[in-house]
Image (cartoon, rainbow, N blue to C red; front, side, top):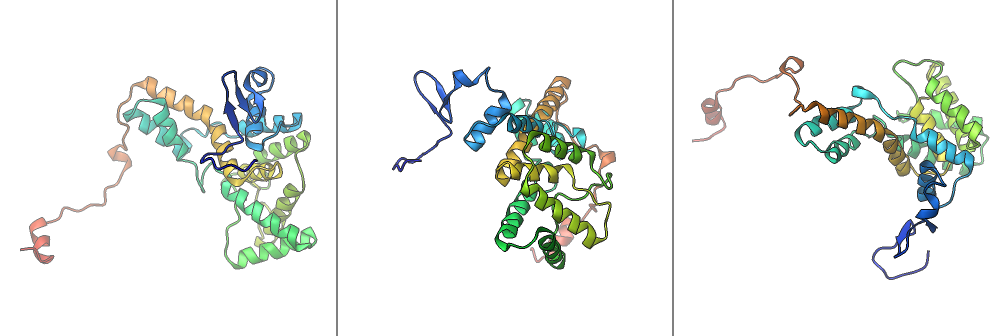
Amino acid sequence: MKSTSSFWVTSVSSITAGDIFIRGYAMQDLVGRVPFTAIAYLLLRGKLPSPGEARMMDVICSSILDYGLQKSGTIAARAVASVNPRMNAGLAAGVLGAGDFAVSPEPTGRFIKDGYAEYKASGAPLERFADDYVANLRAAKQRVPGFGHPVFRNVDPRAEKLKALAKECGVWGEVNDWYGAIHVAFRKAANKPDLVMNDVGMLAGIMAQMGFTPAEMEGLALLSTFPGLIAHVSEELRTGAINRIVADENAHYAIETRDLEKDLSVAGWA
């Protein structure tokens, strides 16, 4: 990027009198020729994807889609839409439901990025490094993201499908092998042979291998949830329900009636 004194500098896109340019390519040339997910890859990575990378982008953007009412973001989106009946309001609320404990692969992405860099700098054999690394994590009582599931044991079928597709698309690599070795070492050290690598962990590993940053991983996960969020907000708007609240039978109010005058006196009020 050329040096400039301008306040804003971007290489993502530009607008001229004749067209919009995405990473230097005319929008009119891209639309209808290059699929949406391939253009998304171009926007993020700054280069056109290979056919395999483009297909994997489609897989990534199809990997979450919707968790129904079991996702806090869906409930937030519908509740907000019931009092502010606009699509953008519901979507904004739904986006905030992604974080360290739901939807977002960013924490796993950070773990993989930092750990893999440490492995490359160490020069140690992979299996030995993984054993030592996991031992240090366990000694520090540090959580390893991307492992475990409340239902699946031994294998998470969603993760295995992602792995097979990544290999088929030619985007499986050393980063994935490193994270897989950490998984094996962790199961051995924790004596949990049935502990799975879950779909979020697998996604993070694949996206790390493809060169995406942890922050971009969260953005792509959110992009994957948007069709489901749009459908839920649209359904909510069609119901005409107003002001969704927690019904009294679903809440316990741990509040006792108190004597204001007495308590004011105790607190020293005249």
